[in-house]
Length: 222
Image (cartoon, rainbow, N blue to C red; front, side):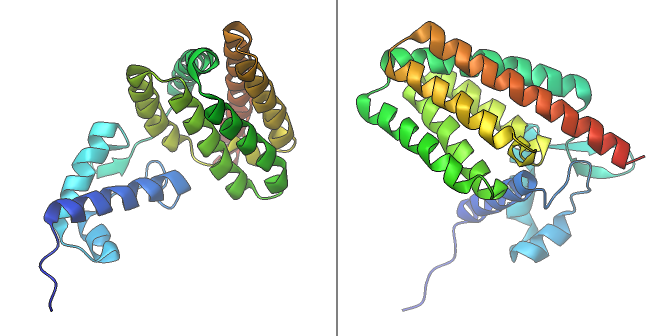
């Protein structure tokens, strides 16, 4: 029995997910041109779902239009990075505060489990980054606030443009692990103030490492 045609919406969703992943992993670098025909050929789909995926990525702020180039992967300048981390500190601090108040025991245990697995992957930045994303996602959901979750989702999309993980930097995996441990300890103790402060400190430290990476990249490019 032959299969029917694939729903165009499904093709568009698949193309969107693939392109978003390519931006997140650095396969499509900030500032690089985005060509519909090349993407359609690479993904094995028509240009229609690619066009729809690019419209969604543009709405997310991940794709923009540059003079004389057309569509390109968006780039964050120094000011935008500062602004992004400022919002991340506020939102993640709030998420940790809410988690201390509202997380179930199972959610707290899940956060603790993710933290425990981090050091087993300390020598593998890519795997560690995946665990880190899972930890922060679990933290967001543990806050049990749909509006905060939506705001954090938009923020996470913007974070994709930052490129490689800060966890690849020497000693950052160890300090991040300690910071995550402090966050979970405060959440488990149902201490909202301590949980928020631990989360804010974690983001401030991540920002310092990120700015060092950006400065190093600027030197390498000149």
